[in-house]
Image (cartoon, rainbow, N blue to C red; front, side, top):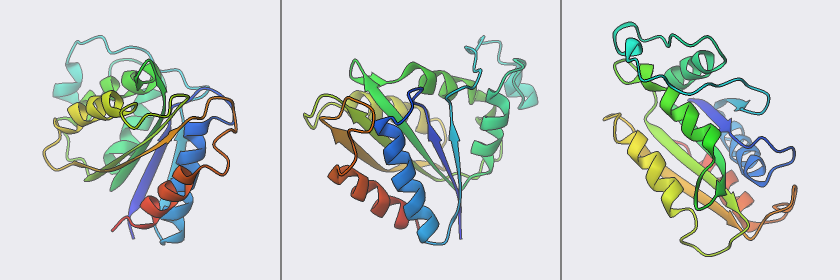
Length: 179
């Protein structure tokens, strides 16, 4: 049994990327894993100041919601990040959280498998490539971690539009297959 953390970064209610997050979480739970889902909606997460104090202390100097989320990231065996695609990239709030996860770099983090769940109005297969590349750049800084999989729901724009989308089943199966 693994500890799985699912982070939904969309700020919109009934978002399509959050539907992917929920499907992934259900799959991981059905496989017997302990699952925690965090949404960034309503969270205060400021920009990294680049002071690098966290490299010495493993704690961020900014007092907001990011340090508690980063702590949960450190203690998870697997992490799934769900994001809407804006201008062919991950949303800003997810990028800001990844920047704020800098205290993890020198830490004894547990995570090994990282997943990317994306949704966009555009439907072409290349749409999530830059977002996945951005996350892969973050993963590359953690030598024990790897991109274990990604799911893309294309052609969904309005809230709730992903209902019935085949990517939900793919996300569920990916969550269920965490080993």
